[in-house]
Image (tube, rainbow, N blue to C red; front, side):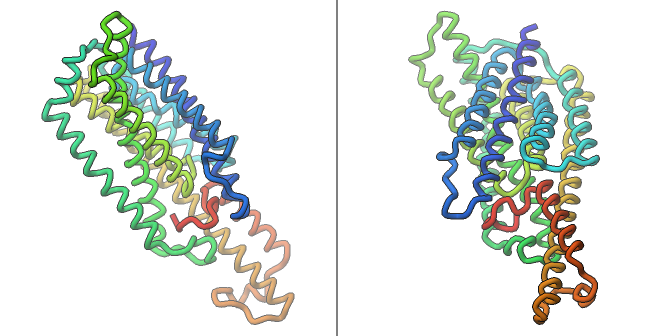
Length: 378
């Protein structure tokens, strides 16, 4: 029943890790709201460093949990982080949480519970030679090769979107183009794939390093074995790359969108990688794969919910700009700028302008748009 202990530790770690992510996001939001001359690098922000510490603590807990249970069982438990993410994002970041968001989280959590119940609960101990033999299998090397090719391709796609994108739609006060709409949806998903698949390496290698640590504590020291330090180095590198990727993504999108996308990619990559490396199979394949499919559908629903929220925020911001320009025309008798409706010059009032601005501000809180003054459109 050691897998029960692993499940308990993993649940605690999921909540702790997600708290750290949202604290880091809070620090980024506060820093970006300051004038440029007062903004600090992330490593000089106490709040961000505090969030990083909590995030590291959560990852250590995941590392310990992998010593008690299979990654196939623990991976779906990441859905707990989605529930805690909703709470933290709403309380700390004031991100709006609607009905579609709640429905999506419920679908994801249901799918994850199904996968956990149907997954393999066996905890087979592995020696050093066995672990190295498993990692040398052609199937696992092919899996890792696909990931090594995918990472730079996805990163270049994201950089291409950043390089060729226009100024933030909100600042221009215009309706989003088809390209803008595509980027709003595709970019967060790509960030999730990049961060999630990199993070999955901490689960795969963490299980291997955990076995090596257990062997050492049992009296058979592995401290002089180079394989142990190479595997531990891989875990550390994957963790650092995950932190960097998360902070880059959270600069442009709210955590209610990024975290579920990242979790889904992490879940699928961890489960597939674990099955390949440790040659595991679920106890109930139909229930397990149905749960995984349900989790993916839930994230798709969440993507729709976030896109709807983004469009509402942009619409509110555009209306506020139009009313502001119309009020300026009335006050100064100046010629209205291009893009301001004719009727706005005659019908707009100060109260309407104020209401639209408040609507835009509330929309911004719910989408993360505008949190980075000089950020690209996505």
